[in-house]
Amino acid sequence: MKEAKAMAYVNMYGVLGSLEKLCEIDTVAKDVLKTLKKPVSLCFDVTGGPCCTFHFTTNGCKMTDGSDGCTCKMNFASPEKFNALIDDSKPGIPSKGIAQVLSFLLGPFTKLTNRLTELLMPSEEALKDRAFFEESTILTFYTIGGAISALANSDSISQQSALYTVDGDVVMGIKDVCYATISVKNHKFTTVKERKDNPRAIMEFADIDLAYGLFNGTASTMAALCSGKIYMSGMISMVDNINRILDRVAAYLG
Image (cartoon, rainbow, N blue to C red; front, side, top):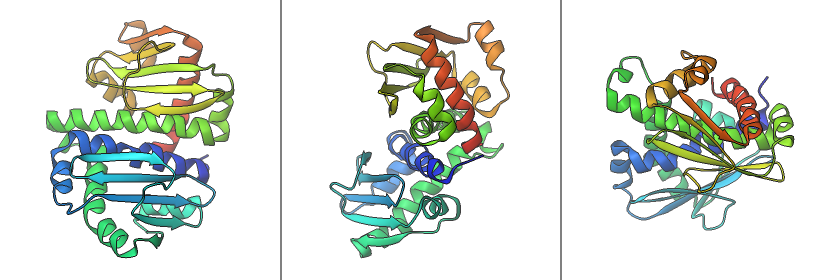
């Protein structure tokens, strides 16, 4: 069963958090950013949930915790209200830079999130294009990476696995394609969308096709492990706990 508060964190750090990589690797998103006349820092502040700011410039997007540096802000009265933004495009209440937040939300931001939706919820026809397939899988990887920490910190079931996870970094990746690091300290998880040096554990998928199969449930994790297509090393208990949280990710994002 999904918890509304945890879903809000998944939507913020997993789904919207992937805007950083979308703006880095997607040509459509880059073209949208080129239309910006000046930088925009949009904050989503959720009562009883997350608060993050997305800093957009013509060069990309950077997500930060809190509202520092925001030029416009939208408040949500509850996690459910914020989830409605993601599920039904229902905005919150503008509380700062009202004119800017409305024009940006209805213009560039909507174009970016529509593109993100195309890639994270692709049609079978779109996936026949190899470049689109690879980009879709990469963005799904980063969405899952963000969702792992979001659930470890907020979902009651995932928090049980977090309690048994020792401190250190776990590198996850698709070999030679993309990497993320799950950093754990005092059972608190943070996702960094890059490969950190000297991790305590590693879990790496052999190629992008395998990753796609694992993400959509058409490939067997056990078969991939037995065939060596999933490489694991280091503190395996950390990987085991993250894999348990991944089961919850599938429930929230499935």
